[in-house]
Image (tube, rainbow, N blue to C red; front, side):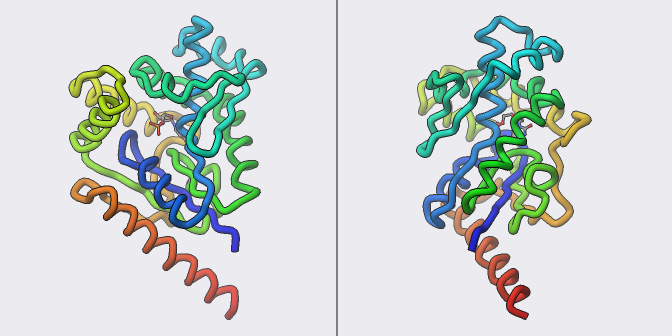
Length: 227
Ligand code: DC
């Protein structure tokens, strides 16, 4: 049976770490939609375009091709930018890019195509509300701002990306605000999503909780279909 799982939630709530592991265990394709907004942001910065200038950013759409490779490699116009998209200059600008409707429509079309083919677990901000409103499983993953900032700081340091905890916490707060206040497809929990607070859970505990939710929802779906 083809299964679609949507995991939404604020910045640095651990969605991608968990989604990657769940994908591996369940044999699903993992789609990191945030990486696509980050790749577009990287391209704007490379071109010297001001990320707060919507018109100039949107004008770049025809020149941008973004590919997500299995294993997490991110390509923009065939350049491997997997590491660059995690740098603070990209994190600090990505919420502006993600607030532009034309850029969202451009990327959402590709996300829907990717989800059409296989069983997928897709993480982002608007997956359950907008990209895949009929997803079989919808999870809204949250954690306190402090917990999220520490997690993202540790992740960056382990990848050799220089940053300070204060800078990360400020970035997380700023992105929470912009992501949840934009007009088009803002960050919000779908009414039929399951809220998962990971503030006091480690990665393995969150993975186990997500798998338990998926298995339960699929069983319910199978029972409904055979009734
Ligand atoms: O998950 P992330 O931190 O890599 O996401 C980067 C930014 O992209 C985030 O600030 C919000 C935006 N985003 C979005 O608006 N919609 C998505 N589906 C995924 C990410």
